[in-house]
Figure 1 (tube, rainbow, N blue to C red):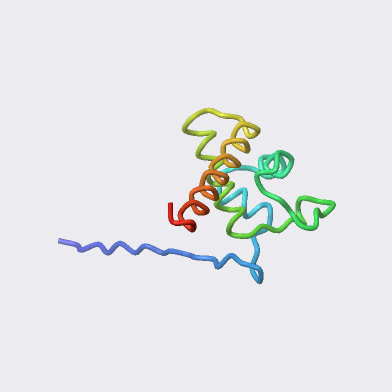
Figure 2 (figure 1 turned 90 degrees about the horizontal axis):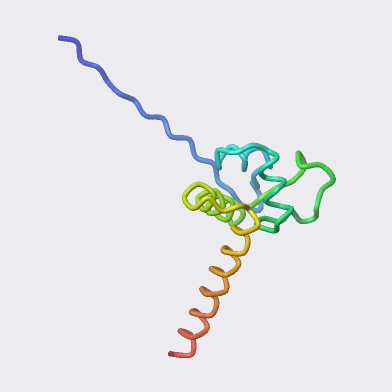
Length: 107
């Protein structure tokens, strides 16, 4: 009897100010294409600072990745467009901010 060994290789990339994601990497992480990332920027789900002339020069941080993944999930699970996803994400952020403010006041 032959014994088989399974090997799982996991690659990780640190994302931060020193190692931002390129637009293509963000697209790949979300299972999307570069045009989708351009749309994310256009509707304000993610931002590039400063706004570079070409998407190939854009860089994104971990917060942008989380927002993009959440937008992708909203598209997939609920069939919303990116403009609706942007509104939903803004509202979720505002609710979290207000809850934190209330908690800070002891309410």
